[in-house]
Length: 180
Image (cartoon, rainbow, N blue to C red):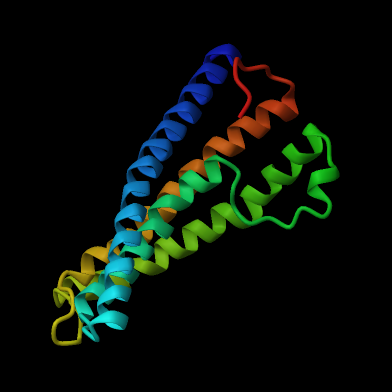
């Protein structure tokens, strides 16, 4: 495969990953809105009417978990994740690209792999017993929520691949038609 063909394939892969995380991020934003509505209802019921439903409270943390796990790739795509910018903000484009490449190789990819790899026995156990809430009145299907753990980290890892490709292009001086 020639160099220009390889560049084109990597660029298309990066764009596809970006589109996947963009779509999931936009979809998960609706879950955030639903979560705000449910929390508001829960607070009103609890403090005005002294009524509390365990299922509502569990839905709140289930929804938050899904927003966090499935939205992390979207957050990384938009560079909105937590970062200590003491030195990074002062670096030029090539310096930032080096930091991002090293960060992907040393922290992001190994961290995603470790969490994905170690989550499978945990998820298998949950699926095998059809785990639900241990509380009466709680939500069933907790095993589905736990399945979001490796999915979320796969999305982050995929976005890391896209980030790696873009920063590699910057470092190698390969121009693309867009800057993200």
